[in-house]
Image (cartoon, rainbow, N blue to C red; front, top):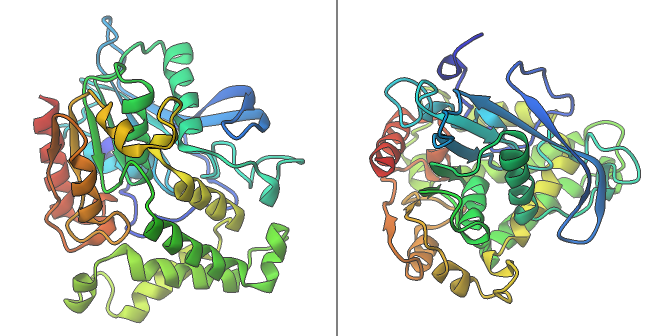
Length: 357
């Protein structure tokens, strides 16, 4: 079996959804959830959760670390943090990597039969993802407590939610390039992407029989303008990996051409709706929910992130007791956290390694 740390890094532009026919992965396992009642009230029949584990749970059951996936990613989204000399080492840690609903492997529009197939897939909340992973850990894997929870982007949203929904379950929480609530600008940005995709007549209100390629190309160009910072583009930091702006766009468009559009939209809707204040007991008050966080929390926004701006992280940090706010000094924008830039990888890994001590 290939060691985890030798598996390929996630591509920078992997902030997309999974392909329509997911490739086989020898590390991926499935936890059968049965008929799952969701936060919105719908019951999703025969639901499943995809995940992977590396390392061994020790006799004390005290060495488990959870890494929930991010938008459109899978368990490979954290490859750069795992291996000898890195913050997570399978020789020491029991590493659990879970995959969000609508990513194409866990229950999604693309793999769920009628009546919840395609555009009929029910709304999913971040708290739904947290709830099923809690079941996986406690009922399936025998993990009563976590050494740490580490999350990037929508994984960071899940990490914050864990800190509120299960305040004593982890010793440490790390959230990077993600906030505890999706603020109005983020909602509008995502709505623009969804509108670009659904404007293609071939989308057919989500009932397409082949990928809506024009819509996917428009979606791709929308995201290309947001994933990196303006200064990254001005300095042409895409070179030498990509020789030109057109090459960046073309590579992304080629990758996105086979994405499942309903998966993209469903997970974007989960992102749009998230508010940690909607946790029962907080009546929509996200500031109150942030004040309730008790676990030591390392908060690492990227200085140039256009998805989750530094100002939003500074604002949220005002309400979190004992938070360690450590901005990532990068021009790579949101992609600073996705594993594509070695300097950012090293910075994030070093900060996590120090925090977990």
